[in-house]
Length: 194
Image (cartoon, rainbow, N blue to C red):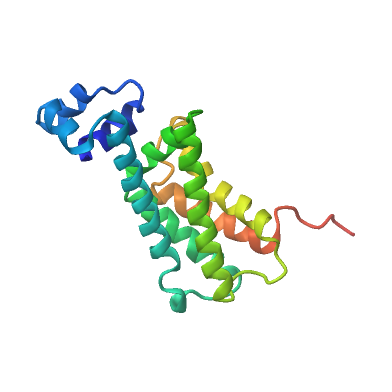
């Protein structure tokens, strides 16, 4: 499955054949079909693997809530933990970018499942008292999904523009600081003299 995960992340699901995956895995196509049944069966397993990695990220972020400082500092800590996890998972980042930008029914289902994971995380954070009690859930969910997925979906474009992986600490850490500042104080300054 690792070879399929890597190939799907690099090239997308549609153009990658079982023969290509088998070649990269060093096995025959018969072994893949015996284990997964078909390419859709293999894709379903790779999707499950990617979701499991996302669950691990969620656990890493909210799994030790007692260590998270409340208030605006929590935003920075949560953002840093997600960024660190994604920094360590370049294949997952590429796979997510390809899968989530797919206009297929499977791509839309995968997106719904990722949103479900975010929902679970937000509920955990709300129970821990880390979410503003009057904050509407749907708006928070859309904002968090955008904050998490935007860097993943635009990583290639940012890397081309910046000349460095946007998850590299030299880029990611200043960005996280700006996100924290904007969320804590807003983006715009008060007008002078007013």
